[in-house]
Amino acid sequence: MPRDALAIALRKVAADPDDARIPQMAERLSVIAALYLARDAATGGAVGMTRARETLREIARGVDRLSQQLAVLGSDVRIRLEKALRRAMEGEDVRDMLEALERLSAAALAVDQALAPAPQTPGRSPGRPPRAAVPRITREAAVAFEGLTGRPPTRVTAGGKVGGLFVEFLGKVFGALDVEASADNAAKTYLAMERIRTRNA
Image 1: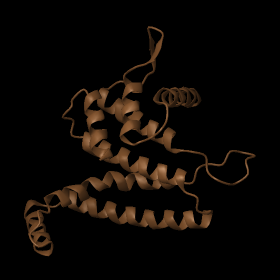
Image 2: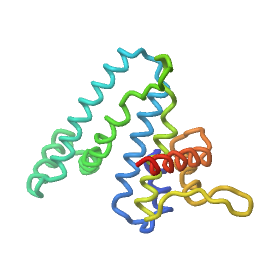
Image 3: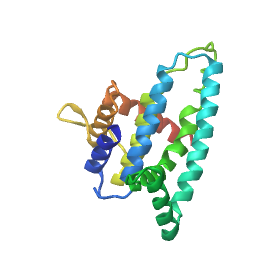
């Protein structure tokens, strides 16, 4: 699964491979990538996309409420819930199900961002939105990289070759998500945009 491969990539760059944030970061990366890749591939009209966006946002709000409620359950209530679910599910182990629901909070928080309409370039006629998946995945990977390593993402040149830990990490992220793009080009573009954003801040 992409989430498992992403977790492996995150652990390899993390200062602490046992960092408790890694599963949530992998979940968030996986969901954001799926949403943006789906949007890039979509061929539906604006009306259809608006309806889909509103439906998914409503689902996200419900999931977020549920995941937050599960996260603060007392142990006695949780035990009762597990017993009730086990009866309803004919004896199946439901602990993994509850843990998965708790992790969905990260996914819910990402949905509105991922489904926001792509901004129109001035003077550009309305139509198919520009491809947004690679820049968005790169940005999310950069945030995770800095959070786990304590160092900002960089792109370095050594022995005539361009790369570095962040570029290698981004390549593994793209591989886990089956994204066909150059990690080096994506990193270069992201870092250039960050320099512009910092100067204009």
